[in-house]
Length: 247
Image 1: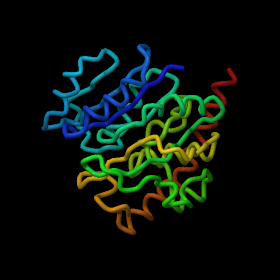
Image 2: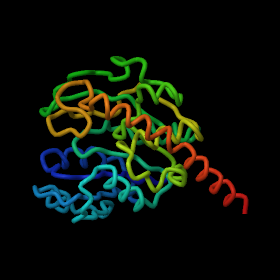
Image 3: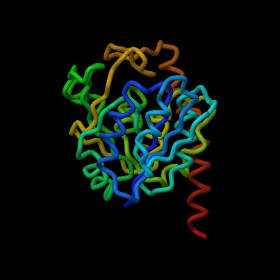
């Protein structure tokens, strides 16, 4: 099946070419890379355009100032049945897309393990799942307590977006929202193979140069409450989806 890779960019010029190079070489001519750029003021857009690849669909000059809304826009533009989420500053293993597409023949959401690298590409942690063993399994309450849904490691069937979109207005993380929707309604699988080199640096949204989250206790509690309070919305969307499929 054809693939859409969705990337939300903002001032990612330092690493975006390396990331795109690692993705594009795995894609077929029928696949696409959707990039929503949130009005970067560095050379991000110029670098993307310089690749001159017809599979890249760039939407520049967005004004979200918010990574969740930026990703939401990119997801709405995706046209293929399989969707991968990507950060702007990581590196993908050369076999990532092939392995995860195969798993999606039996499951609806796949989350791969990842290695952690520094700004220069040096490995800091070989296996994130191996380091945080409690984070590498599906389950609503397990992931509500400590979630493993890192967007840069996720691939899923586009049909899931019927329940996910539009994102609730105040959720903190799009990947957690998609993952928890998957835990409630779909088949989720975590695979222990590191297929992403996750780059840690001072500009990361959810993590700095340390392994632990930068979020305060208040934010962590709010993230989980935002999932719980929207369960009625999810059930309503599910009912509408099921009803429409029966007609």
